[in-house]
Length: 374
Ligand code: SF4
Ligand code: SF4
Image (cartoon, rainbow, N blue to C red; front, side):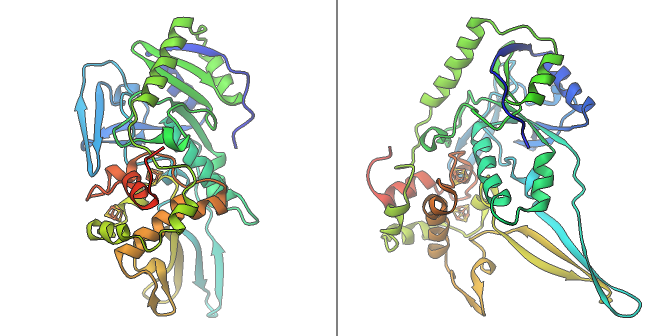
């Protein structure tokens, strides 16, 4: 887990020194992962050289649309986010939980499978994804039975955040209170300027690493510019949810005609739940070998948009897109408050961008809950 946050002081990291940061992380045993441009999308991949970062690239996002375009800029983080968040690094899309084998006498033996976890440092994490990480921590680590695989990966995670200065049109982290500034949950946070980064440590190990780079203190003008860019990113967001706690408004409108209207567009494809950094539903299944000698029991991401998700005793409880979308929205923005003390939405906008029919959670919530967005 992250250590306690040290006193905040900011240093200036020239752009060339970012490579030294990667090298220092690698030298400390971390596999570095960072944003890379792949097939027209920004995704997290192994990162050993900063030249592989998406320099001079901006993403143009809209409901159902994401285009990456070149811009004339030395910046490497002048984009909002890609379809991935931190989720796949901690909550594996698919993993074997245990195996059962039959011995020579025909007896069955159950063997727990421990994930092979290596320390990983993720570069370029946005504030919304840190907020999502805090929610996933509550889900997987809170309570009586913490998830061992998640816990192991979480202990081995180092986070280099980058405050967001170029939000997409689909972003609305300001309205959920989760961005664009990364305020907690990181080891190091960077603000990108044209010639480098204003860097601050958020943990003791982050400070040790930054100190080892031997950077000088950031100048007042550099800090002011970094602050201005974050403030500008906040002002640039136009999407809003109609409130931070929509529980009562949603449950008072379970028969609202809008559920039917959105269902006419919803394909029940589950893209929204796959890209959502806070969705955590999973299903479990057995894969027996053909000779019956052993079997694997695995867990994989599920979605409230699948038939199987609401299959109980021979009946699919939510058999149509109306009830599935309603389940998703009322849980995400409503009953999460009872479970986790806040909404399950951190305003990353991914479900809006990656929905093939451009369904926009802010529009739907506003139509159903009524009133102008806050
Ligand atoms: S519901 Fe949509 S905007 Fe909210 S956190 Fe999930 S993907 Fe992001
Ligand atoms: S809301 Fe969009 S992304 Fe989600 S299941 Fe429906 S069509 Fe797919």
